[in-house]
Image 1 (spheres, rainbow, N blue to C red):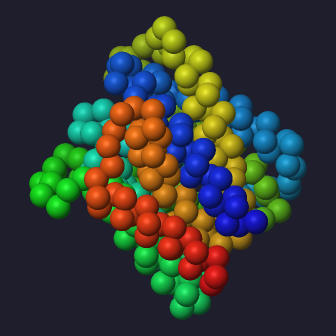
Image 2: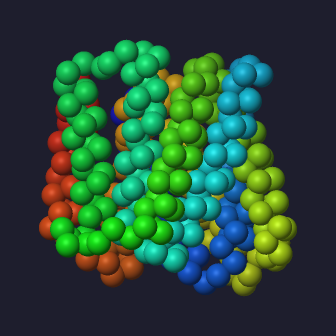
Length: 274
């Protein structure tokens, strides 16, 4: 079940990232993120009620912290996507975001089996290769900054949700989304950007928000069982983002990226066997 939920999560997040990356180029980036979080909160609340659970105060606080870090992560990610492109920002954020929960899980639970550990290492390499365009790409410092910042924040988000108790279900995601709404709203107001959505934003934000809420819910349930594996699979959402960009936005996959997809499949097989 952990593997199935772990795969469902990046699939959903990858698709909504694909939508957000393309729609964000129209401007009003923070306004878009704000409305995405509104619908993500509604989606997460509906899912939490459906699944049930009995969260403790600690679970809700951890969820709230995850929302603050997620708001900073998503903002940095989308700014990087829009201003520097997906190429470096995505894989740097993904690898950084995967390493943090893996290290935390190793500290708290100990190292996994040799096969699983190998699968995790192969998976991290796969995440990087999927983001590579060519061996001659130069290092874009601005893109690296956005990617590293987003990755650290995503790693904290994943860790906080993974530390919640299994009995809490998806409920920790809800206060996280509420905190995220408040954080982004503050950034919108301080930046003197409009709160009112632009034309066509609401339908897109609704789709992204609903998919994002379901993806975060699936990740939370998986991470409560195995933080390292769930964290790794969650960061493979960039691979799905790229796949959807190839299918629907006309992007082309480089040879290194194709190799990365092959490694990702191998990593998944190793994790399942482990």
